[in-house]
Image (tube, rainbow, N blue to C red):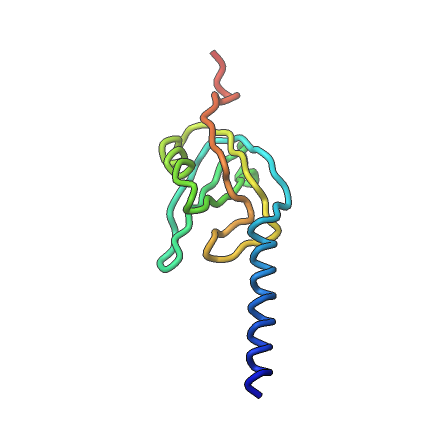
Length: 121
């Protein structure tokens, strides 16, 4: 009985580790999006995550929601500084997410402040 229980726990632990490794390390896609940074906040009580939104157009239907991993402190600092400005976000999309990593499947890896295409000199 004891060996069976240990075997089940090891199998479940191994399966969870494999799923976590796949979700965390295997990207579904990579890309970049540009828009006006309209929201960036730290959410959560037990698991704090950084969440944000950029507006990619006039209507509310063109909102891109994203998350930032806690380890990307430079990206977090830049996003705080660029709030309300036009930015280009480079991201990695994952197959799924875990609640302690963020609310979305899109994780920002780099942020750049760019001139708005709506304002011409």
